[in-house]
Length: 369
Image 1 (cartoon, rainbow, N blue to C red):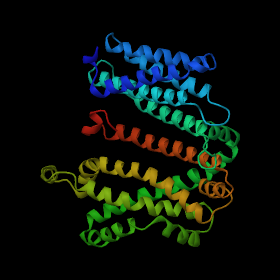
Image 2: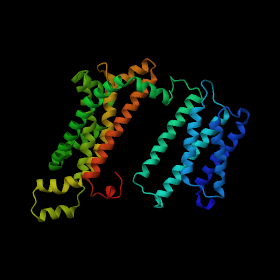
Image 3: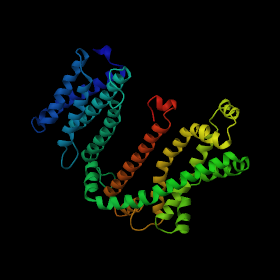
């Protein structure tokens, strides 16, 4: 069945099966100490039969999950993990990669639908990274001050939900959302004014490009001095960070309509307002949503960094800076996880809205947000 595998898939299959065979030999002196691990090694060795017999791709996913389970269940309580554990990690990683490769090939060949099935690929990739992180930090006895294990971060997350929720409300709800809305709306309105007035375009656009290059660590202390230590100064930083990407992208989008389309509107005696609302703003939709998606991440980054320069005793940035000072690194990573989840969800909501609004655009018709 070698002819059904690509060269990369063949290499991954040989790595996974070879590590299984070596691991089986290396674990023989401790026979019975970790039965789940030895079952994984035995089945991994049998996977080499794929070279002569059909081997469904879903079996690679099962073996990757079995290897991850066996590894985490048999990690030593202290000290370095033995050689066969590292071989199991390599084999499990190779099985996961091989599963994703074959799944992607099946989707490309039309054997599986992309909708829904395509979500498995990033999910497997993320889970593989977490498993590798867990095994390496615990198996190599990495100091939790340098990098805590995901299990330790999850434990701290569960024990600190009240603190994390209060920080989320202070940073995201009170600072990010108002600053994002104000900055994006202001950028959109100024872009329309700039498009209407050549004088404003010549004056504001160079200033906008200059201001967008200013570092946030230079803006944040000034905003704290102007607006105080509460959420207002963080929202002001978010406004400054989101205004100019929206301005630049909207100005570019308003020029996206072709000359033929604008001439057609003129032929029907359309006013500037009618042309703007019925042609130019819809044509600028992909540019506007591109700015909205960029700003969804910039806003959260800006609010967190601004909290480093003065804030009440609550907020993601405050908790991260004080957590590092107290060596509470697991709490710092829990805050980072909250920020990552919030930012990803915010971006995803904007992308879903974009699909509904710009349904006519080729990228959406092709199934990509």
